[in-house]
Length: 235
Image 1: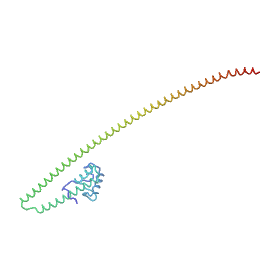
Image 2 (image 1 turned 90 degrees about the vertical axis):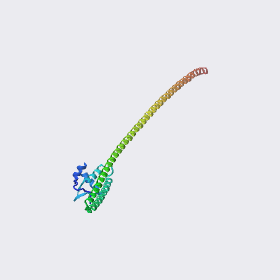
Image 3 (image 1 turned 180 degrees about the horizontal axis):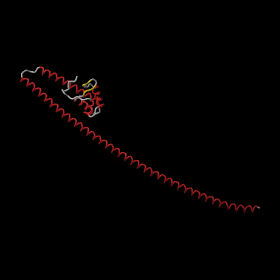
Image 4 (image 1 turned 180 degrees about the vertical axis):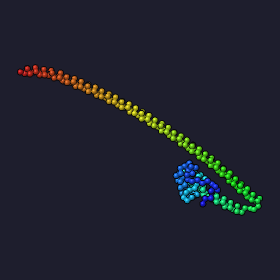
């Protein structure tokens, strides 16, 4: 049973809560189901949820969280239980105080002044907690921005390094292709020189062969001539 509702506190329907938080009505229902699943208590009119200001704060916390929704919902439920326990203790104390108020006006004034001072101290503490939360949110926001800057810087450095590596690889490939082309050209030139030497040798061989044939023919002709003369003498 919720005891943290203030007298005359404004109540919101799901649609009004959606407008107040700046989300869609189905999202309000979704957040409500997540909160209830983790033990959160809503005021209800039958099956219809009725939202008060503390519930609006819970919806905003779910809207703005960077953590899983169930984890944030558990934190909200824990805070609500502490608030409800505090409300119960305050109610008991108030009943004890106001149920036994002194009849003496002077003593009554002292009691009321004590209550006023306690309320003032509680309000001051709430203001301090609000300021601390604001500073904490600012620090978290700055850390997130720093994280984004560092991530961007690392990504840029990695991109530059990859670009340099790709350029070096391209230069090495170009140099290798140039050397390979030079070697191919040298090989082709050497093959041409070898072929020219073969052609010259073949030409020399043919020339020498022709000379040898002519020499043999020149030697054979006298033999034929002298052989004819000898056959005459034999007759």
